[in-house]
Length: 187
Image (cartoon, rainbow, N blue to C red; front, top):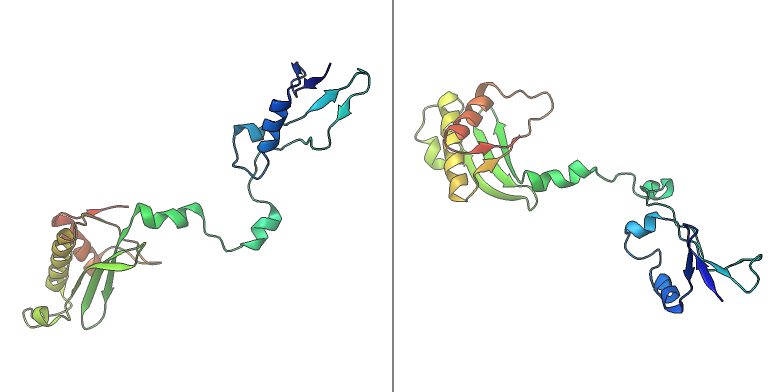
């Protein structure tokens, strides 16, 4: 009589169909809850005192994170937050101030497409306002960005300040004007 001893030390009758099932689930298949438990198959032959361990039996360890060798292959891999942030906050506001003009745009980060643009260097704006860089120009740029973003069905935008940049002054005026005209800022 053949028996199969499971890892919990209970005797289960040996079934050849069960053995075929166990062979079909190899380590290369998807990780499941079963792979967390050790797998041990021992056949007890006609003599009970000498168990025969099969050659294909092995003990599987629980799934762990990448090994050192695998981590060394890709040392510059981005973190989870770096990889998923662009999908969580897809629309990014970019504002540039120069001595002569103000330029603002809203971009879709995953595809790098520009959704809306407003600049005081544009021909129609340049001729209508007295100064291209004062507070009134900042309010006008904020209003135009908000209107053009809403036309493109973008109602939530995020802004990432550069290193050491504070949201105050002209930048604060542009962002406050965009908020006043109905665009939500996602932190």
